[in-house]
Image (cartoon, rainbow, N blue to C red; front, side, top):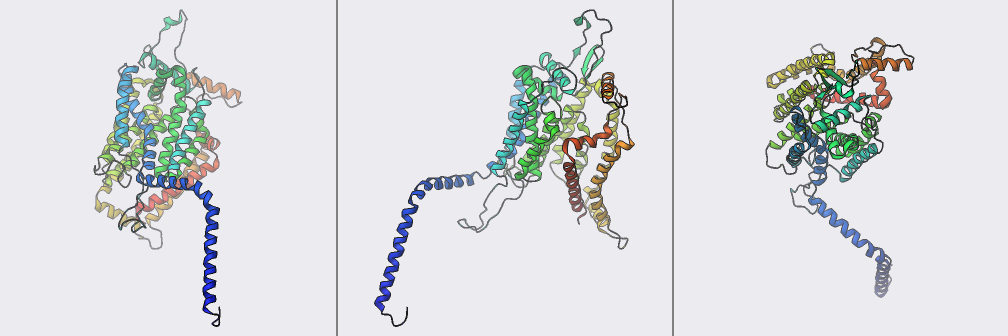
Length: 544
């Protein structure tokens, strides 16, 4: 527009522009009216769901904590009264049901109501739009989709294993022994199996010793700890022999769920489905979850106990735990200790797994954590109960592995020495002196002791794997004492055209088995992860 244009022309042009704008808006309204009509209810429903979900922001975290605690709590509630009644020779369905149901409900109620809803500090948004100043927007760091995916993977794994489960009933290996053991105690209520030669007629030279069983003083004793047979007895009571065989896939699914819970607590809940999937696709996990093996039940108690211990240290108040002081944390720590201790009731080899718990317990006392006392009491109580049951019900079995138990004793002495070295750190003056020693560089340009410790923590996993790699070239392990197993191994060696030596155990080839089951990349990643964890731990310990 130029200055010579009349004012009327300007007004007319403005009116025309306004009419065009109105016409365009009406056209857009007519075009979008149909989709908007259909989308409006969906948008409104989504807004309502989002608004209501903000009120229960804690729910995904609480559900994740609860479902991953659940298997270990059920195992504790079944094994504690089960071993008591079995020692008394009165393992019967009705008394077990009367004791188990209230105990399981009590443990789940008191543990899950104190379960944390997050494992890191909540997001704080002060002065956010639509919120008052200083308001805190609560949110869980556990996505609902992660919880759903974790449960779906664990359930799918259990169903998959149930479809392909193995019915190993005859005693030729560990599953058959465990199943026969569980069947006997389910029917007779006692672990005492009499050796009655009269039941087989007049057979001269009849011997009741076989793979997985010992004979002593006219009694047949299974060569395993009674933890898994107690669980199999419950399946026998529910659905007979098929029910006992299906307990293995159920326990395997619970083990995957417990492992995912530990991954979520240590790495982040978003990684829990990945952890569950990795364990589920491993060939060893599939193998031991299709037949009665002790390893999945050990995993349930081990991973579940660590989940309970981690929950006792979770930052921030958990749902239902506000204003209750340290009582919830001490309860969770105590239950975690009991679950870890009961792993020995399932497998005596769990003693080696629990050895690192003692220096960790000493460190908890050094740091004056209130969880140390309940955790230590629960751990020692579980181990003591398991060892007592083993000595009463499986003494010939423990005698046959006395060499391994002596090795456990030596390892316990080494860990006891480490624990004794950690104990003086409880004094602040000692901690300051140790920190100065690690940071100081008295030799000029040479690295400090703290730097040496950090690099040693990185190199140690590499050296351990290298040692296992060269072990077959420098060691041949022998130690089998069971005549039936010696004969069986000798037959396999003849079939494979190997030197016949039935006492060989081939423990020196353990790394080859790990490579075959997991793959070399998985082992290398595990070594890298251990090295990174050692570096971080050493850096935190020396204060660098």
